[in-house]
Image (cartoon, rainbow, N blue to C red; front, side, top):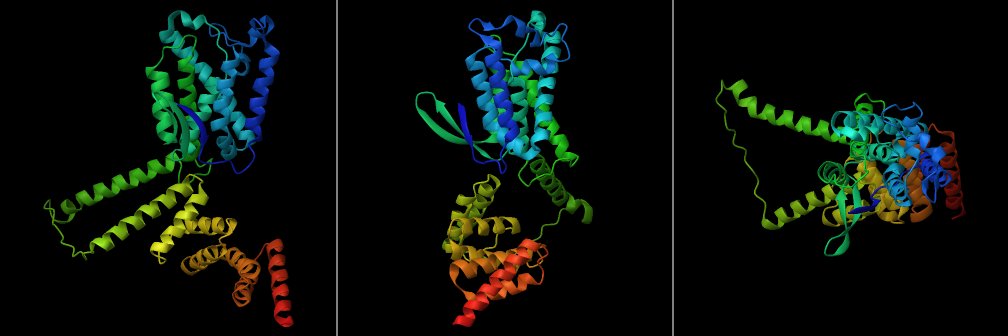
Length: 394
C-alpha cells in the first residue's frame, strides 16, 4: 500500500521541505560511492555506543542505497509539504531536526534495553525524522484523505483517512507487527512517530500552534464534550428525582416517507460538505452545496463553511450561485466582524459579472462606510465611480 497523494495542498510554498529534500540528495551523492558509503563519511553515522554530538543530526542526512534515500524523500514529500505549511519554514526545520535527534535517542534506548548486540551497529538515514513528520501530519490533518495504490490480487487505488492509514498501517503494522526486514531501525521509526505526535499535541494544547476545527486535538475535545453531555443526561434523573429517572414524553411530528428520505438526504449532503471543506476539497464541497440548494434552498451552512463555499463558487465562475450564497451569508451572519469585505466582494460580483448595477451600488455603498483597509476602500470607491458613470451615460 503506497500513498501517492493527499487531499489537501499547502497554501504557501513549502520551501523548507524542498530544501531538506535537496540537502539529503546532495549529501547522498557526495558521500555515496560505488562500494557504498565513502570511508571518510562513516564518522557522521550514529554510533550508539559512543556517539559524538553532531552524529545525532548528521546521521539523518546519510543513506545506504538509492532505494533508501528514494523511499525516505518520497514520504517526506508526501507528508512534509503540508506540515511545513502549518509550522512555517523555521519552525519546520527545528521540528525536523528535533525528530532526527529524538528518533536517535529512542533507537539507542531500545537497543540498550532489548537489542543486545544491535547497540553497536551504526545507524544512518532520515527515516526517523520522516516518521516524526508523518506523526505530525496525523495530528494536524487526521481527517484528510490519502490516496494509496494497492497491489494484492488486483492493482488499484483507494482513499483512506490519514488517521487510519498512518496509525494502523504505517505505525502499528509496519513497525510493530511486521518487524522482519533486516537492518531496519524500527525503534527509531517508533520514536520519531512518538515525537511528531506528542510535540504537535503539546503545541496545540499550549496554543503555541493555532488549532483548527479538524486537527486531532479538536477531535479529542469534541469527543470529551459529547462524553460529558451523555454523562450529564444519564445522571440528570438521579439529581432531580431522587434516583428515579423520570421519563419525559416528547410529542414528535411524524414525517411522510418522502419527507423522511429528503431529510436524510439533506443531512448526508451537509455532512459531506463539512467533510470536503475539512479536507481542503472546496470544489467538490461547492458542487455538493449546489445540490443541497436544488433540494432545499432554505438550508444554511455554518458561517465559515458558507463563506468558503461562496468564495469557491465565484472562483469556479458560478457567479449567480456565488451571489446567492454571499447574500445568504450577510442575511444570517450580519454580525460577522468582516461583513464589509463580504459586501465589497458581493458588490464587485454584481457589478462586473452579473451586471446588476442597483444591487452592486447598494452593496458597495454599505461597504464603503465600514472598510478600513486603504486598498479595499480605494477599490470600492473606484467601482462606485465607474458605476455612477455608467448610470449617467444611460
